[in-house]
Length: 203
Image 1 (cartoon, helix red, strand yellow):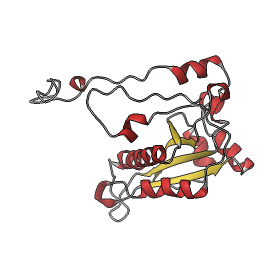
Image 2 (cartoon, helix red, strand yellow; image 1 turned 120 degrees about the horizontal axis):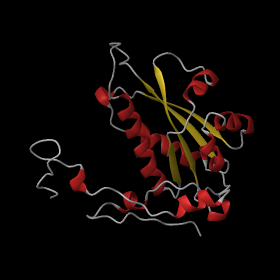
Image 3 (cartoon, one colour; image 1 turned 135 degrees about the vertical axis):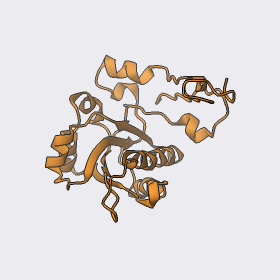
């Protein structure tokens, strides 16, 4: 059975948020086109600075062997180890400047993160899992996909159905899959009065 790791929350949250986590074990099962389109649609309706929608994505599915292998080659070696079973890989990009004014948009990464967060929750609702990765080779991505000036590679995203521990290639990956989920308490980062002073709301 796939591992379930619901968040041990200090306060009630929606079950979709509580159940979301980032497994490495993927079942070798294709994701239906309709479900992928729903994930992208959920992201499309994310909030963004000035409604700039400064995101872009390249998608590769495992049934396109050449395209999938090319994208795998843009991941760091540590991520390639466990991504081989994921049926879908995506690369995310952020446009660094506002389209109309040409001035820097310092919120570009934030906006792409909102898109990805929407997708992650939609995935849980559809029985899918998503694992987002910072471990990418940005220069290789730029060259491989002819990324135009003004776009910055952000992350890779693996999408699929949750697999079994046995689907992972080694003990290190299996240990990570079973590790407890942890988060800092609210008092460590919710402040009041001045930065560093815990807000009475959470203190």
